[in-house]
Length: 402
Image 1 (cartoon, helix red, strand yellow):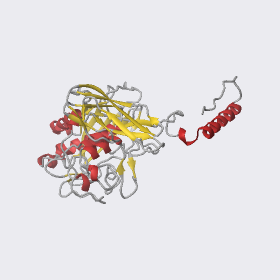
Image 2: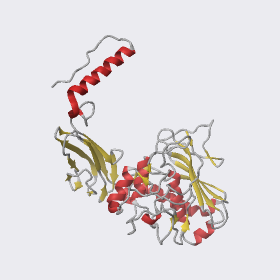
Image 3: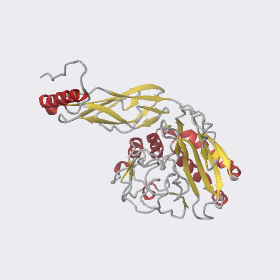
Image 4: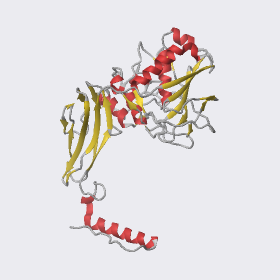
């Protein structure tokens, strides 16, 4: 049955045109019925889209693996899925979420996803897979204040680790002489596309209290990612942290906050920007909703059997800790929980996925081996377990956007 079409006509008043459009839509719905649902632009077929990789492109070193996830907007009966992974193993899948796909040979490949239901097949959605060594494109530009240069080697080690795992964006933004970018009153050289970080030693609350405080200071208006940030280490605690061999992990943890981890997850509210990547933020079981982070949690870090809603973020602690870290009793010694515990603090693939959900290009192959602990019950508090408590390390100061 053909669908009614609105004939072209001479320009007329807006109300008259609106009435004709409304009438045409009503007639189309009456004549086409439920079979028209699910497609795009009136197409009765199902619609396929790729959720992971989030940006439609993904990079991995030879021998590495990537997550994929498709979504089919159907409605015409049972849905079937069809993936094709040139250069990958497996080379195909009939699952919406096929699990990890390994790529051994260097090259650029096009992964495709399509789905079908009783109305026919969808058009194919595509994702570009680049397999090869990723270029070093992103850098943190450290500026020191308050005597932090006494720990320059520790800050530079942490900055180099960030540059290993984060490869972009590097979109430039010219300096604004009329409104210089500042952190804590210090002018920042943040106009060349990298992230300028002010490393400060500053009294916070004396020995043994809050150890650090970090936040972006200035965000780029185009993508809301930081171009200038600050990391404050309590001057009363820095020497003890270094002597205990924990200072580098603390600084690396804070630098990831400076990139936006935890700080920019929330929904936009008032003058505080955010990416709307939290669910149940005010409830007892908050969780991270980003597709890349959830895929990494599910496929690589042992979260497939997690009984709650992934990815669990911290439900306890104060306002500067809660919903800004991974949940301690689930992630144990992982770097981005609310405390530094254990003999090592792995930088997990889930953490890199959360950065990808903010808009960074990351090298998943640079994540450290990590599996979730055996306890999978949602906790209600942070348990530093004798480690370095980093609760309260997220600054509430809203960044400026330019």
